[in-house]
Length: 232
Image 1 (cartoon, one colour):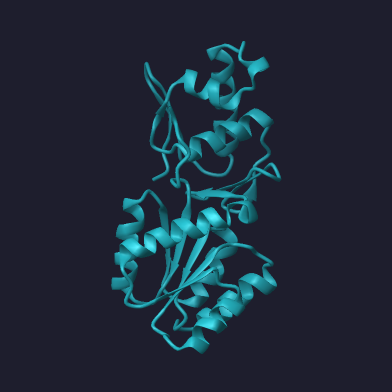
Image 2 (cartoon, rainbow, N blue to C red; image 1 turned 60 degrees about the vertical axis):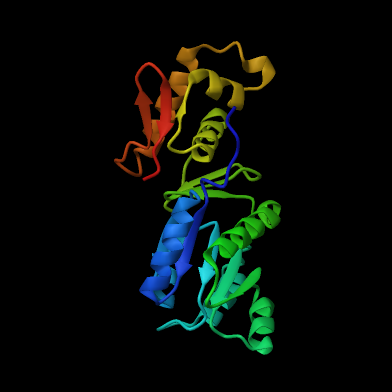
């Protein structure tokens, strides 16, 4: 049985220290996250609107534009409910309180324990799931409650079944999915009389729409088995 996992969640690390970024990337990728990196605040402010990550790991002491400014900008200017975890060497109570007042969902003090941080990230994502209401991965962003799909910030005009397909593929990236699994997951009971050919047609149309924006073949056919959504 296919189970929904935290795979399909894009994390943007905004951190000037390369060693800390490497440490975070290693642990995040081990847990199945897609990882993006910004070494300074200016770069982060370009990436956030374009890639719409699921969660932001934000240092406060950044070159060019501070973490405080980014947090304020995300909440006040972008009006975004994107989860934010501040990771900072600032340990004063006043700094922590300020971080939460800026809109952070959690505050982690350096040096941190990677295993504990992974648990905190998972907890924040679960706690904010209804509020955030999106799934982001490898440039794709889906907002199921609104029925919106984007690729690199551009809207994808998908039918109901194409949207369900992409959602299911993103939740189960890099796994081979049989036509039966796809059928059972995206079609309602009264719709399950469709043939394998119908599923193939929906996937063909979804591929064509994605390729209008990128040449990469994200949805690959696995001969004799089914399909696989390849994130990397």
